[in-house]
Length: 189
Image (cartoon, one colour):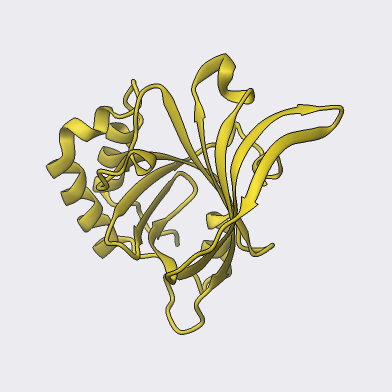
């Protein structure tokens, strides 16, 4: 028998789906309380193949506890993350919203791996970053340089299901993301 989703999940999804992007920032205390409740009531276990499969896909950042501009949510910016644990790959992509989205973005590619000792941890090794542009003749224009990562990076995936992902980063930042079924993972990777 399937376990019922906690009521906090529906409430959090409603807040995160508000338009324009970033509207959830005005409800910080409520979002934090809902996240804590979901982490307690619906914890992720990445050793479960079904949960791991749910992690795969394109996600959009809809709320963040960070004050860093590249980790925040704004109405004019899509902050996307593509995760492919099955391939050991991930990518973060910042791009403008609307017709200019395909013209240019800033991307950081990474290798990702599950931490066998921790059921929620994904290790992240950033590899390349820079500008990505449109596809021309079946090939994407891009200018990426190698990244020297001087610190170990990781994400604890604390909640994940078909629509919602909550994670905590190695710097203490909390993220709430929504799945973007309208975007193809292969296009981001």
